[in-house]
View 1: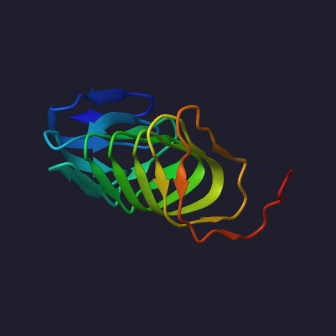
View 2: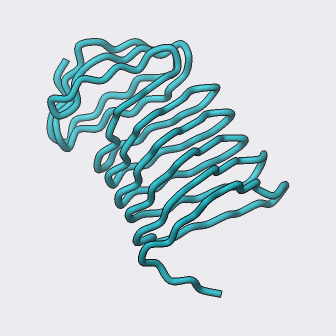
Length: 164
């Protein structure tokens, strides 16, 4: 199946989609869980989402990636898209370029590079961020209404300003 231009395909938790061809501007909306299988190409690059793992994937303009229920994402780039890390989901080695990453409810984010965009650590549970670098960040928020998020990070600030 080809998804072009402003087309959209949504694959729910437990869903299967194979032989996908995703073109620039198209939206692939899916949740990474252990029972989801998605195989295809995105702008000519092959990708596979299987057994709760997505790797080497780009979330492009208008795209959305949900990492939940024990799912894991490695080497993901968010380009004007949105990524949610929720309910024991884990992301490793992620680059954020003009998009948003939300870390919720015991989600784990390791080695995040923020070139531009918003990294939000939200309330409820104990989200964990372990290492991130900031270049030109539009916003970093940490909100905790029920518990305090845990941070164990080596943060480097390239060209950002601190506000009090």
